[in-house]
Amino acid sequence: MLIKAKTLKGYTMESVNGEIGRVKEFYFDDRHWTIRYMVADTGNWLSGRQVLISPYALVATNSEEQHIAVNLTKEQIEKSPSLNSDMPVSRQFEEAYNGYYEWPMYWGGPYMWGAYPYAVVAAREKGSHARPGEKPWNPHLRSTNEVSSYHIQAADGDIGHVDDFIIDDETWAIRYLVIDTRNWWPGKKVLISPHWIDKISWEASKVFINLTRASIKQSPEYTEELLLTRDYENGLHAHYNRQGYWVDEQAVREHSR
Image (cartoon, rainbow, N blue to C red):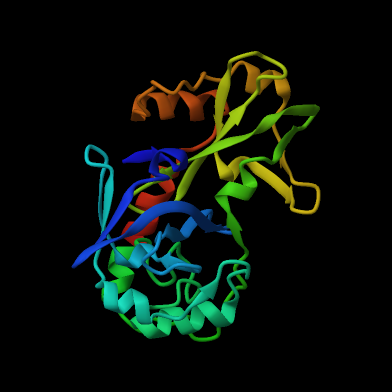
């Protein structure tokens, strides 16, 4: 299911033996554009501590009841490596964190989740590492809250800013950035795939897209009420003459079997 990051914010996170908090934001990497951690606001339970929950531990998202099931106990989470709220997520922390839960390092392989295309499969194969001769890549973890304010630069000028992210709650990949173009076309929002991004300037807080303003203006409009069906996605990709991500991922699944 495709769901907006802002919609997931505030969802209750339910551990095996009780509520652990609510979704505050997400950390994603800018190589695979995949959610690596949910940040839980634990209220008074673990006051002053930032708790990260990996998709490895996520069981299911219930949009009707607005909660996410987590396959961990409160005791496990409380004893996990602590990350101060004012500190970035370092590689050293991630190694300690994944080692504590005995989860594979997601950077240990060529796919979205290391040696596997899906987090749930990778979590079952604990201890998965990089293939022989392959060097682990250095992830760049970014906050969805931070990037939501970034401006969008088309091939021929400014076009708007990042308003939200569309997340696939099966793979936890970011499928689209929601772009608000209100300064050019009042009220219109459009979707841009991360695969169409040319580069990102983290220093300038700007995303560069190798598409013209005219092509973006003429693309299918995205509204809050719109259901992201495969028909809509087909039309969006056809407009830009791009292949759908589902075609590439089907090939990856078949290759990884």
